[in-house]
Length: 79
Length: 312
Image (cartoon, rainbow over all chains, first blue to last red):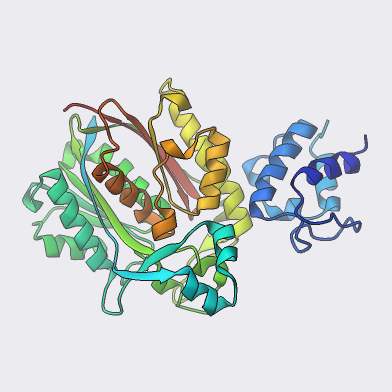
């Protein structure tokens, strides 16, 4: 499964609103993720992609859109 | 080796309700509860200062501890909302208690400073003698130092908590304390001179959940304990939703956590001390109980303490 599909699958577990088709749309501004969903979502991404998000990367800007999430995972050795 | 000899707390009489905040910000009470789970907060009167709160908590703590001010070896005041830059709240408390010429100083680190005060007292009381740690905050006043923001105004309340840390054993032994700071995201939570509090809630929540859970777990692991060995958790009372997420992370239920955030909101440095004082008064510190304190705040700074009730 491609990265985007797996991200969408993880996002679907916590999404509070329809996930935007625009890969650059903010998942916060569109109401998909609130602050606490974001905590769960990042934990799910770590499990799904076998990556450890270090504290230094723990910032909402890195997980704000589908495009940013895919970039992060692709550059951090997602399995 | 050191121990907590007693606790005290004071919250001002003024009550800031969700009804009032909902009207002020044109939101519903349901929205406020969904965001933070807080129902009421206490607020200082116009003529009440952070020193007044600190003094009352300190006096209550000395009564609970059985200490008189002349037996104290030092005073540490913890606050992110001092009444002036210097001398700080500690000086005023020392003066009001008539506590002689013992060292008295402030820690200005907001939410974590109560725990940092405990850590310092734990390490220094052998040299200094009994240390009064008093944490006091007038957070509601800070919220009005600039344009009021609903996301922060709904969270914070005023109050003070205190403890006495003395060398030797019991009744609540301090087994271990660890604190840490990392300034990478220091701008996510700050209070500048003459401004209102600035908080990037998403960043703070991400770090708070992770660091509070990690601090508690690391402390337990290095003491060869498991979560199930702990009878009582006293967390920094930041936000009920955050605490629920933390409980989920640690796989514990509410019955093992003392919570008062619904009544007082986030009282920053004072919050875990108020919780400890109320938990003790409620008879929850039964003999043989292991207690974990965990706090997180601006800095970013975080930490945890392991306490144990003894028969001493």
